[in-house]
Length: 416
Image 1 (tube, rainbow, N blue to C red):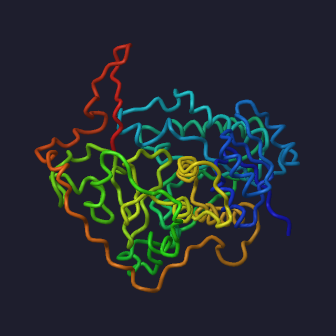
Image 2: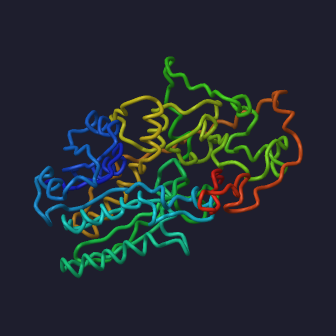
């Protein structure tokens, strides 16, 4: 049987595509503006890449590159860049520009290609914030545009939406994202049911336990040439934080020293993995103190991040460490993409998947080693001890009242 044919937009490093590949699909054309991501794709696969701004790429050129006519693609996939709808921006400001943000044009370009290519099915990935209650104009816009497309093209696309946590499907990482799936003929789509749960819940539900960071990383060996040391002001504070904790350990509500105010920093500030739990979400643009960090008090290696994102082992991430971190942090975990691709094939394309999941992570049967013992507090941080006010709420951080030239409030400190 010939592979099912995929057109990929906003491909990035290929997280979605590798999952669809594992499920029996073939990427026939991929549009990706970022030159480093395009190099990663070219180094890892022989997919036809259009390395250009999608604003400047006509759908007929995408179809031509894919060797397809309108209506022949099986699935259109992609994750339009999500900054206008991110949770961090909403927490910092109490609102975001969202559809008024020029970057939100990525949604329209995806829908423009959908209308003009008319694939049999589509999958769009985006941040959970796209559907926040009272802030769901992006999702409303998608529904309205699908109605317009159906009227003009006599199609029957409908958006089926769900927010999925990758850990619930065997990915060793807690990562929540929204997925939107639809079929040209209007078929119903049921998202797959979770197969994994937290260990205490799995005992009662019959599901498998969440895969842990130890499951994913226990066999990874760090190269002697990898410099994964932490640097900067807070580097020596990380060893004092227990596994699975972050800077909140050192607040008045934590178990350490009162060095910070409650929720005055990003959640990922000094965030550390625990061996016996899934990884925290891999970040795309981390600062020197932004985790998750390894329980050995160092940065994660590129291979370790790729394992946590369930990328195929033969993918070659091109560029610097920062480039690889960004590519992986922006990606969809490939195993979750494989799970969704198999459901799309079966429900919307009448193709029954065979065999087991190719990207599944094996759970260790041996006991997970105990947590590392936190280090004593370095003297240089003791001067920070004191009474620190908790964060006052959404959009009310330390600098929340800085003023824009127009007189409106500007929030320059985004906190989680």
